[in-house]
Image 1 (cartoon, rainbow, N blue to C red):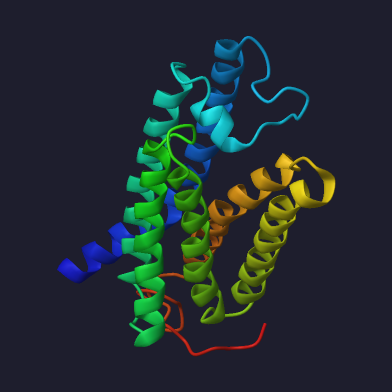
Image 2 (tube, helix red, strand yellow):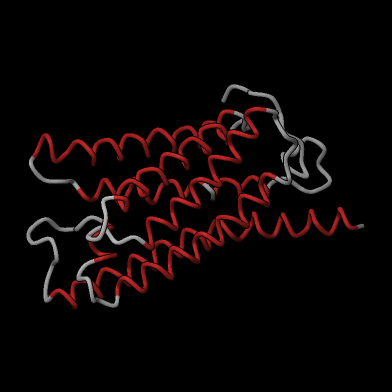
Amino acid sequence: MAATLQDHRQRKLLLWLPSTLLASYLLTLLICIPQSIAASGGSPCGPYVPCDVSVYGGFPKDGPQFTTFRLGFTLMGVQLALLIWARLSSVQPRDSAFVKEASSFVMAIGCLLLMAYIPFWKSPLHFLFAILTFVFLGVGQGVDAAHSEPPYKCARQVIFVLTMTCFFGWAVSPLLLGYPISILEYIATILPFAYFLTWSIEVAKSPPSDPNSRGFLEQVSVAPC
């Protein structure tokens, strides 16, 4: 009975948290951007629109957007922690792969919060933790995708590749063009949170009584797409 109740809670978290997590990130951006522009008296990055996410979240120094940025990412950290717990506790451990996935997601949450609370104008650690957040998310999602069932495996690998492509495109754009293509950053930061929607879809299509379903659920071996 207790196990059944826990399975029910895990399913609820996996069904709803991916959507609320992505919505929290988008809502944080949608609130921070006009707050930053209003407090700056115009675009804080001049002609290079849109600005990087960190600029809208931390400039100007005394603007209201920094409080919004902190609250939004704190809420995301809590949701992400619950989501990862629900996911990992509903699959069978995979030895070293399971540990790698779990530790990567935990590190990602820690870096996410440090990034949010250290403004970019105060310390370059902000950018370090921002990069590490998505590196650790990428590692965890890469392990998850590699051990997923088809067709989820293919979808997750596509999201992973698109994320990496956009991230590196944004990173090298200042070197090649002299200015960052910030839209690539937005895509690269949205996709990792959109990735978790595949967990919701998988759970929605996997009844608790299905012995072949993943989670409450049984982790399967690596399978082709």
